[in-house]
Length: 217
Image 1 (cartoon, helix red, strand yellow):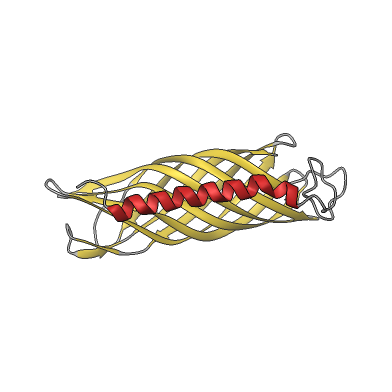
Image 2: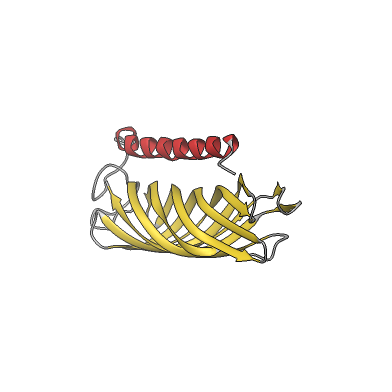
């Protein structure tokens, strides 16, 4: 079966949401012009002049591996995932608070008996709270997750796009004042949808470990 209208609509909404966050992030420096000094620009609040600044907008890419399970079904989709992220941080001393959104393509799938389940794409919109030790940032993150779970048999294909939640932790290291690298773990849980090919509600939950690079404006 080809993609349903609801799946296409959800993908469009997710792409528009990510684009909207990107526009807001890139426009944010102009709104922050009355804030205190920072090493790159006027983003940092109460930050010493010579300290590494995590504040302001950033854009980057990531790649990782995820593994999970489908409820009420014996399949365990796993595979490589990669995508882009965009975000914005505010910093006060060692405390860093921010928002981040990402959109991922995912190769996770698994076949068992007559069923095959896969998660071809997903995205998240999360808050981040971290503690900075100069150019090292340790953080926790959590928020909204969304994505598609696809089920297949020899004769049918069925896809459902749903929302859920995600939570995780990460560490990021500033390589230069504008470039940083990160490693991150996320747990994601997408809500149930009733699949005709199984006759039961099926949902996808997964763990993701990924590395990424950010460019800070």
